[in-house]
Length: 201
Length: 79
Figure 1 (spheres, one colour):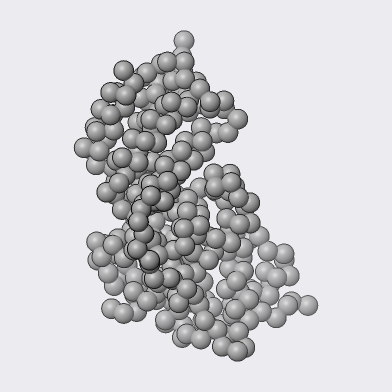
Figure 2 (spheres, each protein chain N blue to C red; figure 1 turned 60 degrees about the horizontal axis):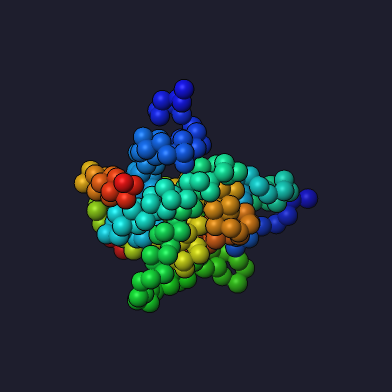
């Protein structure tokens, strides 16, 4: 007898759903929908297109469950489907050029010493004290939108969704070193961007 | 001998430093630099906080209406 949905592993539920067990699929959707929503909102820079993206992603999962053979963890496979749905949607956008965050990278003098003073270098850590929650959320989304696409994807998956470097590498189809380099560059840019917001007010 | 590190070196290696992925001599060089550089201490503080602040600021919660709509949509497509 199959395990009740609440106790069954993702992989068991996926196998049951692939065999036509509708409640098993329903249980998988309920298990993953909130995290999928948050991930898609982060990759899309807002919530407006998230419902359509999730419809596509979950329908894609439903239709290709039989091709999920359990070689990868279900979660990795599932988040790849959601990530791809969000990235495809972004690619269809007519993009307005965004202002690069390069200017927010740290700067150094000829000896390699930080050009800025300690208070300015620490300002990003205090941005929550300077902006209300709503303003910070708006600026955070806008800043992440200004990252180059490849940095944004790696940063969202690794630092915001807290996947491991190995999981992100597998999901994006690149090496772990590449993920680390992209995440590090994204952090450097966003640190400077938040510092600028914190220092201005 | 511990290699001499300047701020720019440390900034480039910071992710690996914080995740303890550097060779011991390189790590020791950064530790020694951090003990005498207030700028880098401030920089490390803000670098560490950046992901946490942005994670908290961008944590969207799925509205109940979106959840209902998703289930309605999927039920309709599976028939």
